[in-house]
Length: 190
Image (cartoon, rainbow, N blue to C red; front, side, top):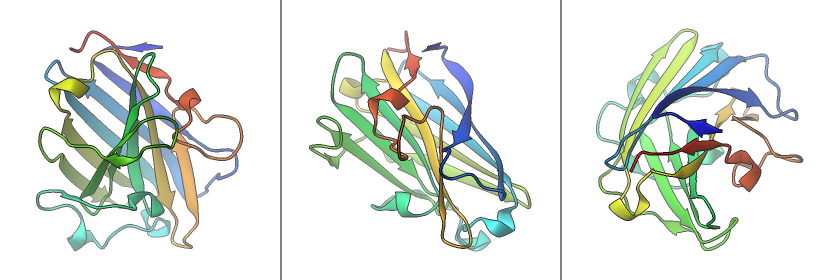
């Protein structure tokens, strides 16, 4: 489905990971002609039942690169150029950390993805809501124009249980890398 330059996407829980603590998750997507991608995630729920960094540890300064963010609460986006098996993965943690990876094909050839600049990440937290805004500028060769996008999130409950949310889940176990999850098209942005 073609996406305009700005769109709100509602994520759904994977059938194997429903949660009473999470009320919903949405993402606003904005793409720019300069290779910029702005993502605004909003998570509703009982924040006392969701494992998050302490309020004073939430992103208050420049975001820093880190690996393994998907092991805890993490907001994600995957981008692929139509007709190519290559794709990239972007991860954002409410602790202010981020990660960016390039893949040659489905789960193969993973390596760090160089960006034009470190993403800007900001987080706001309330009793029943968590908001994370991420602004990413890809390198010119990776411009977001005419790309397919998959939006997803991992939410860790206080028990340590991980819940998986996506715009579309492929059949089977949760798999954010699967090509069937790349359902949004960012067209005319380059």
